[in-house]
Image 1 (cartoon, each protein chain N blue to C red):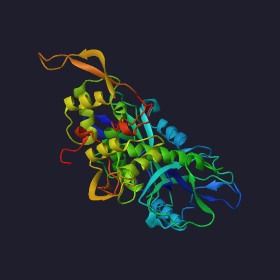
Image 2 (tube, chains in turn green, red; image 1 turned 60 degrees about the vertical axis):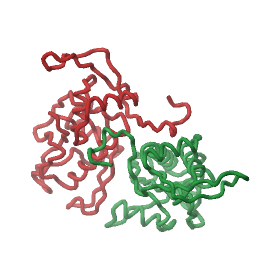
Image 3 (cartoon, rainbow over the protein chains, first blue to last red; image 1 turned 60 degrees about the horizontal axis):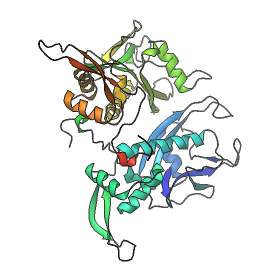
Image 4 (cartoon, each protein chain N blue to C red; image 1 turned 45 degrees about the vertical axis):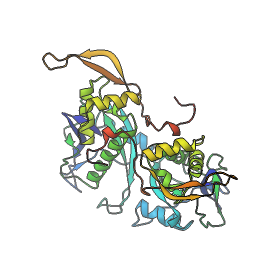
Amino acid sequence: MLQIRDGELCVLLWRRALPPYEGFWALPGGALGVGEDLGVSIRRQLAQKVDVRDLAHLEQLETRSDPERDPRHRTLATAYLGLVPADVDPIVPADTGWHPAADLPAMAFDHASVVRSGRRRLRAKLGYTNVGFALAPPEFTMSQLSGYYCSALGHDVAATNLRRVLLRRGQIEETGRSVPSGRSGGRPAALFRFRDRNLQITDEFAVLRPPNAS
Amino acid sequence: MLQIRDGELCVLLWRRALPPYEGFWALPGGALGVGEDLGVSIRRQLAQKVDVRDLAHLEQLETRSDPERDPRHRTLATAYLGLVPADVDPIVPADTGWHPAADLPAMAFDHASVVRSGRRRLRAKLGYTNVGFALAPPEFTMSQLSGYYCSALGHDVAATNLRRVLLRRGQIEETGRSVPSGRSGGRPAALFRFRDRNLQITDEFAVLRPPNAS
């Protein structure tokens, strides 16, 4: 699970209490139960760590299958990418905490590589989908939103450019409300929201859209 | 594996000779070997059906885990999406053949649903990546390319619009060569090629690109 916290893209990890990798940090997860599919399983396991209602988006990332990935026995792991909006602060167990995705502690198994893969997926999807809805709170200023994009992408994003392209792509809209700018004498900052809080490809390549799509 | 054949998006299937689903059609695949990861396994299994050098692109699609998907016992299946360019005609075994993806025969397990999922992935990626390189031959006219896009997307794509957007996105370039137009008295048609035959996201959302990317 990824969330932007204090301007940094962070990942939820728990500290392993038992070998292998005792004391190392791992992604939340566990064995697939009898009669469970992967989607049910990941939701059950996340519910044991955080309130799953805090998740704004969840998608299957990839299945890892290196025969040597678990020193005990052969294990395949299907990783999911979950996103938590910046305005919620899930209550997490004592052995669990948020860590900057760009500066991971000593990680168990191939989990550091899974985090890098999830970060790449998020960065790519920010470019061609509306997935920003899952990072942002329900309403935000463009200054806040460009901060979230900057944290997720790892480079600066100008608020004015971001506003222009997200409006043109129909991803965001003005709420009609505003907040004080925070700078003394500054104009109030307009509040925006994402128009859709389900994942959509919002690419501009109109020639490739079905003829009847809006 | 998907390929555009005679203007139709087709999928390679083999006919099961044994129960369960005897006589039904299935995607090529099989059990993960000891010491094999999924990528090695899928390449080995495809090599038993077709020459894998014919594959221009291969990516992990998704892992299916419905507890009821195999009537014999619990099985998870990780599906891959493979693309074969339109100009090759792989030699396939006698029990194997290409079928229109939009008009599948009676399919085993959840394989019809996996094909639909692969088709959706391909359609989406045509909109934000250069994945067309894996459908097209090394050189093509815009009329041919728009035909491939039309087959993959399931709706008409005007060659002139396609040419404009793919050039603007830097996906394709002119080869400097041309072929007779085929129409009597028509001008020769210019031959194009994809500039890169590895998957790239070619989205125009420049504000989200890293500052030093071209």
